Image 1 (cartoon, rainbow, N blue to C red):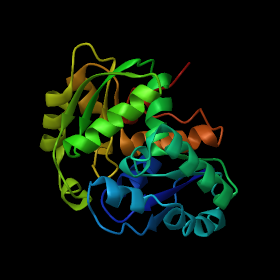
Image 2: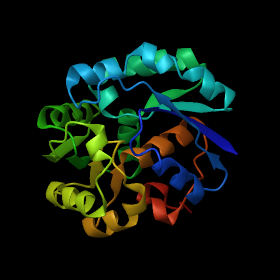
Image 3: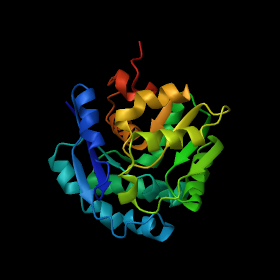
Length: 239
């Protein structure tokens, strides 16, 4: 059994993770909910949500769960610090946890490389200014962003109410024929149940926040053999 510990802000789409557990053999994904503070996709609120103090508060519980790696399961609460700041955030988390650590922002970078995507389209639920910061983060990693779509949603609570049709609509509006993959960066968005359909509609790999978060934790734990046909190209069996 491989145990990937997650620090998840508040309560939105965390039920995606038990769904992933059921689709992967020998994978345990315990979740510790961090204090979200103000629920707002606004830079100052997001930086406070991802502060070292808030993240450190949950690491002892994850250690007790037997976690082999820790991932800060929040994209916006990591990329708002910028490329260097996000690295500092994960270094502080690794020190606090005494475990390999990462965040969903870095998970997207590593997952894009895994599926061979050098140019991506971004389908974000966020306001435009926050979406632009995610695109800047990807560019800092050497990934070209050919198109972005900002949903303009201010709170994670509202994002969590989105269903299949809204997710598919966001994907369609964001996709770009030049892109090698489409990225949906919000961990408050339910996507795991729709991954196969999303990839069928796009005709290319689709990377979503909760999907890449678990994959990143498995990568850190050096468990690269977990696969499921229902979890998209990223989790496809590699013969």
